[in-house]
Image (tube, rainbow, N blue to C red):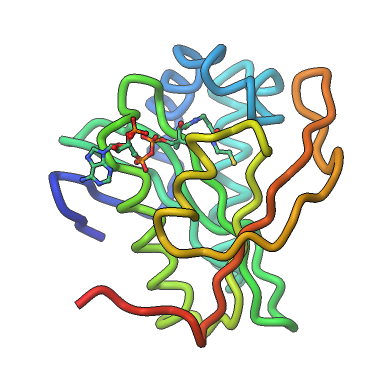
Length: 179
Ligand SMILES: CC(C)(COP(=O)(O)OP(=O)(O)OC[C@H]1O[C@@H](n2cnc3c(N)ncnc32)[C@H](O)[C@@H]1OP(=O)(O)O)[C@@H](O)C(=O)NCCC(=O)NCCS
């Protein structure tokens, strides 16, 4: 999927293993503040296991996860956690290497996934859960017009502490495609 400003989304596949691991390995401090899986990712084989999980998820109809490329370099990941199919509901996750932040790359990627979720996959609800203190992450659903539903207390254990999560959602009836 080609987006504006040389940003491209490619379905995750095993060929991304080495570049993905290198990106994580060189961004540990940036990522581990908010993401629970970083310390457990210690080798390319760990990235391969994640990629295989994402491939299986996609092939079983539970939603896509993408590598984000900026000017041909793998700069992050965004995608759906496995769909809750019986409720036609999806939840999005995302991260970028530190040097790729502040350029609008993720808001473009998430906008594309929201559009795909409602139009192509027929979802009725898309959710984004962000730690309350993660202001850069919260800015994404806020920019895209998601509604803040509330805060779930100590919902996630990351890097030795429990984090409160702000839950944002958009419903199919609220979705306004970009012209
Ligand atoms: C969360 C994360 C992806 C946000 O990255 P980001 O670059 O701030 O997000 P965006 O792509 O939406 O970019 C927005 C920034 O780009 C700027 N920008 C530049 N060009 C832009 C454009 N064309 N459109 C929109 N924003 C643009 C915005 O002004 C904004 O910068 P600011 O916050 O300094 O004002 C990143 O901080 C990250 O990976 N963090 C660690 C992992 C993490 O927390 N993941 C989420 C877990 S819930």
